Amino acid sequence: MQTLNIKATLVLVVAFFMGACAQQPKSTEYKSTEKTKMTETKNNSVTETATFGAGCFWCVEAVFQEMKGVVKVTSGYSGGTVKNPGYKEVCTGLTGHAEVCQIEFDPKQVSFKELLEAFWQTHDPTTLNRQGNDAGTQYRSVIFYHNETQKQLAEKYKEELDKSGAFDKPIVTAIDPFTVFYPAEDYHQNYFNQNGDAPYCQYVIKPKVDKFRKVFHNKLK
Image (cartoon, rainbow, N blue to C red; front, side, top):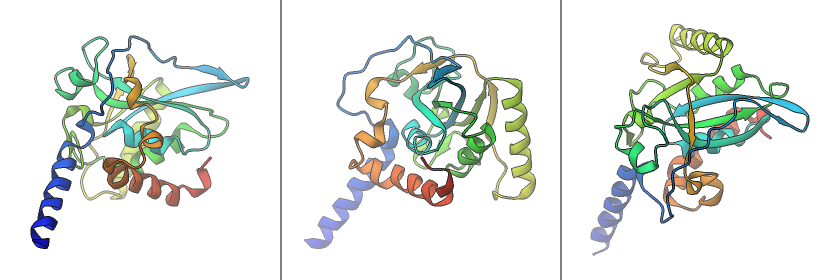
């Protein structure tokens, strides 16, 4: 009987992770039509914006919230063809959007290059349209650049990583121009901090955050 219980538990755990980020919390959904500003003044300091997709936006958000110089992180959708998409629509993979995080940062405290370093070290940029059990074009590795400087830095960094052999396979991260960003529903925002005890947070997000804290200990808030 004990063996059967253990097997049943394993089946439940596997079933949970097959759903991964695509699972929906018991919250009311709504569609947002607001666009995040590219620059914003905070404490008399002008911030810049970076937009990254690296799998489930819950993971990306949790990592960059830890980084010194990051003023705000907003989960949302970018890179698609459908206006004002909602979570259910994006999960179909038919809207063309990627789950992304819009990162507002103070360039006096952290550079775009440092953000790129954290981006590439906290997900697998060699798997096409997949991060772990999260599969689909909405989970693609992508950098949406906001200006020519960001484009050049991203392309140069990607090229250098490929040449260095840092990864066993070629990097498939797309580097695309930023067009529009749609904030995700409220229940997706600040997800790890508000749902840290949830299984997905414990088994998927927390290890990423722990790794980030260890590797980038001198860049934490």
